[in-house]
Length: 494
Image (tube, rainbow, N blue to C red; front, side, top):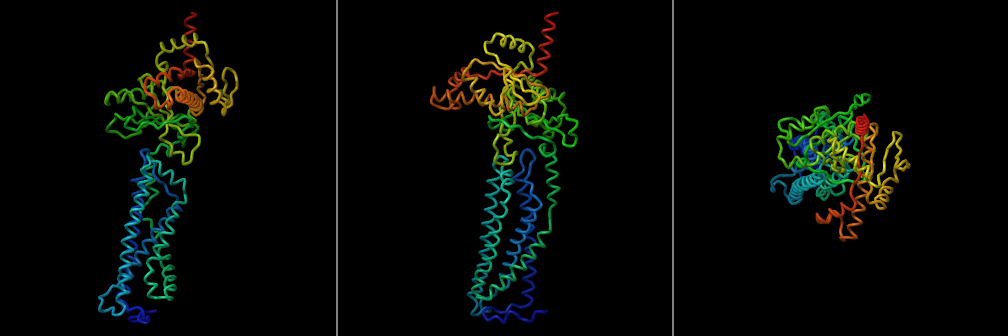
């Protein structure tokens, strides 16, 4: 049905709005809604990449339902502001033409303008603080958001408040008739927002694919093991080298680990390049020539899949030891986790690789020292998962307490940890981290009694005294070293 000229003149409290101005306002409001929806959509994708992408090429991935919901919310906000633009355009006129309606009309116009300005300012600051607070948590904020999956519903009361505010002063003018117009407005805005939200201006799935293709955790199988003792690992600027050891998702039957490397001293090439184990020593030795000397003594950080066999891990450790890289930080996760596993990728278990891994003479001297020691125990982890300590079976849950009691009762202990090639990397981290945790607790207890403060706050000489009283005396004996010892004995007998 065609609108009659000055059709709103029937309302005594409202001045007449010409048909041309009415239609022009509607067109301007719809165009503004489309443009503002596009602006919010692009801002979301930009913030998702700029603030939430980590150094591991991980990005905030939204589910299809979450994307659709956010699109609808953004579209609804855009249409409400578009409606506000219509009100401002319709009711803004010279005071002489408004007559007795001038004060109320000018109040509506000013209210719509102030609402738009205040809302845009408040909403932009809210989003900025939210994104800055979450995105600045060392790359872990995105995993906190994914844990709290209902965070997006906080936008619902914002939309309701914005819609009601846009009708606040108009209700005073229309009195009881305003509810009917508000209902019609809500229905029209909902339909328009639903249709507008179906428009995906950016192919976010392609963006996710491009970014995540460089993410080792996403492209390959890499789940970190658990450790009861952890510390924060060094930043990338304070590392000798970083290694990733993963399994191929597409070829799990092969079982051959994939090795990736990132070296701080290397320039002009992409990070996390895949290399072979045989070329590891050559790559690091070549790159070490281009870095500062003090960086050579920084730790190596290893990210390894929990199911990797220790035969491969020991080969990596031996290659690093032959280059003089003995300080290693193993990327691990805590046993109790509140957020997504990837939130804890900055935790590490520190351990020093003995020089006997790379030097046969040192290995022989160590064997002589162990043969002359008074208290030497043997630790085995069988293929069936059993822990044997001097042929005594120890339950996994009791291993930490058992080691603690052993060290307290026998401070001059020595443990030979026989590492089978078929044992898993996760089992290895469990064993050594429990031993380090037991030693750390004993050192803290002794430090509090002797020096009245925690071990980590002691001076260098005092800390050295505590370390000397409760040292880490665990000798790792891989299968390769057992074969070497048998060969040395055979040659000696011959």
